[in-house]
Amino acid sequence: MFDILTPTHVKTLEFLKNNLTFLPLLLCFALPSSSSSLLPCAIPNSNMEDDKHEVKSFKELGLVEQLIEACDRLGWKTPSKIQAEAIPHALEGKDLIGLAQTGSGKTGAFALPILQALLEAAAAAAPPVQHSFFACVLSPTRELAIQIAEQFEALGSSISLKTAVLVGGVDHVQQSIILGKRPHIVVATPGRLVDHLSNTKGFSLRTIKYLVLDEADRLLNDDFEKSLDEILNSIPRERRTYLFSATMTKKVRKLQRACLRNPVKMEVACKYSTVDTLKQQLRFVPAKHKDCYLLYILLEKSESTSMVFTRTCEATRLLALMLCNLGLNATPISGQMTQTKRLENLSKFKAGICTILICTDVASRGLDIPSVDMVINYDIPTNSKDYIHRVGRTARAGRSGVAISLVNQYELEWYIQIEKLIGKKLPEFEVQEEEVLLFLERVTEAKRLSLMSIKEAGGHKRRREEDVGHKFHGKNNKSKRR
Image (cartoon, rainbow, N blue to C red; front, top):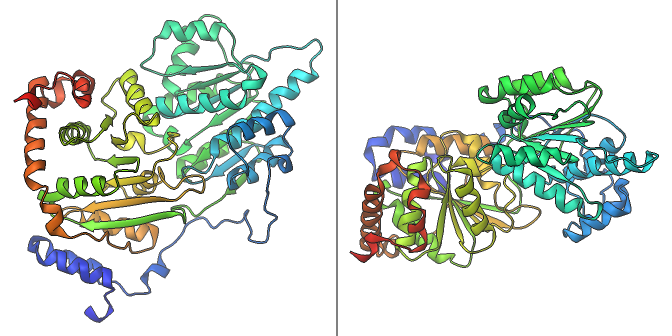
């Protein structure tokens, strides 16, 4: 059996040798060297043939000059694959199903055709009319909805485009006032949209011409199912529908049959692939020393902007405090925080005020955070598909990036599933353990102080992260003064 182990497997065995409790797992690593070729890459891409003409400019797609200039202002020189594939079909008036990996330019793929249709509708009207409530975009998260609206506004800045963002955590009355101004585009999470359809006087979606379901695989979970049914019953049947998703699930197929008419389906990558410009590495670490390895990597790559993923909101909060106590500029974002605080911390990261974002999987999909240099999986995701979405935060739009996964003895089984999913063995991040353990005393003390701060603030469950948010930036940090 052992004559077929790869060098990566040998390193794994060395790690397991020091963690004998998990020795039975070595059998999982005794895979034939050809096993990776047996791993499926589901849904072959039939639309993007290698010999197909490569689109070099947005003009080739049939966009009007105003939108071409808008793309140029945003620095979009060449259409992404999903944009090149989707936009011509959309301009022909067809429904779309787009399967594309995170960071592939999906928002532009549906926003540009909608804006062109809005311009054409305005030009055809005599006298000109505003065409309010022209399109509705549904998003599974508040942050993604805000990002989509920002992109619409940037692309439509020269045509006085008006948008409304309807999400939870923001004042309902304020949103009603914005709806009263009759915006062209409504971007919403399903629950808050249903709330306004039921309670905001004069608001309806009877006039919309376009419906977009972004991150459709997430929109179709149990939390949104009832709201989505109500929305689909409130909008005209005569409309164009665009469905975009990272994965094609059974529920997505069911929705496709229910609300799309003869759609054109496009897929620009394998179902569970990572981009070629992403350098993926792993490091086997003892659980008790994982914090030391995290600090070492962040200091080694101190010039980088980094996203560090944890499994729980509590770990997100603790790590952010610990890194700040160690002198690093980190800020957290998780599902337990209020909308206002999440957006505040996200804005600090996007503006470069904080260079390290500690986050749960709430931040791993859909957020348009440019120039993320590195992703660190502090906790290995229990769902291997989440790995794809996490590392998709870097190496976006043709840029290079690094993803490093810290795997302890309790996470080996999850790591094996990730290797099976992506069909490759990851090289190891090389580091001298002696150098890493030089940080042990500092890290231990910083973590002790952080736990003390959390306890003083009321514990993990009784207080939200923003209650101690001031501590992340060195203000009133009692533990530091002790």
